[in-house]
Length: 91
Image (cartoon, rainbow, N blue to C red):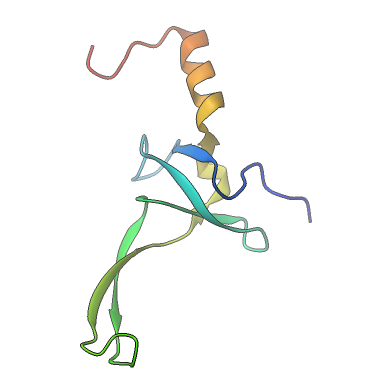
């Protein structure tokens, strides 16, 4: 299977879906599943059981994987916007 177009530590922009427009750093790449975990994107709540590491248990927030096809490298995103002459979101 071929590798993905993004690597851990790169800046990416989400180009489709509910999280469209959000920017973050790639935390993990899951090439077998064709997914990536991006910092601050696709946050889920997860119930955790009491354990030695987490004595109280409770609910934690964490990033869930999204399809790699939904993200684009930040440099390519900026170049595409510049080429198209797209103004900033404020205007």
